[in-house]
Image 1 (cartoon, helix red, strand yellow):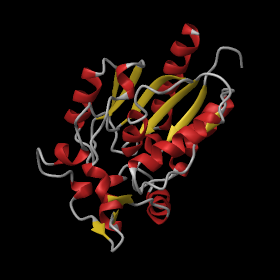
Image 2 (cartoon, one colour):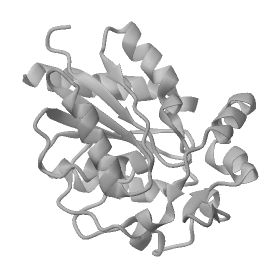
Image 3 (cartoon, helix red, strand yellow):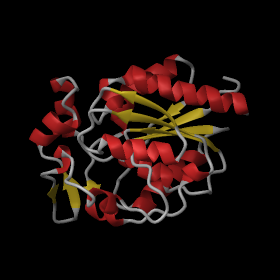
Length: 233
């Protein structure tokens, strides 16, 4: 499709690439080339390297969309983003230089979804089933939410202390979906991220995993961004 960017979707912690399935289906139906890779989430540098590997396989301009910790991966690309033309944040972290997720979480009580994380002997944080179903994904169909729980990708908890370098959003146009009912990343934090990056922002009455519970709203924002960057080519 001439003028249309490729779209790469970056999943967050306690999810995997399948969390984007409903959005992928809709984007493909609209004629977009879409990739939703898997990330090990063992170290930020390794996840960024994985994203660069995926970007190297894209032919032409590419729009990135990151959910939750996926926003951290997207942001950490920094200024070396030769074929990336825009960033979409879906209820995601959008830190600035010198910040860390840990410092952000320390500013107030953790969201209910993060209150009882189980960190294993290898340092990976898993979300207990009750919190996953009733806090993290409570507006998702229960059958689907249990499948999401079964395939959850734990996060190396050391990642929350990793300090952000120069963020990619400083040199790229950005869009942001704020999840008004988010119990994982506080909505006010999302609003702060969006405001300082000058992102085109929408707010949706959804919990954290908006791409599962509200795929049409997520699709609309991604297509809006894709059309904007496509027109600029």
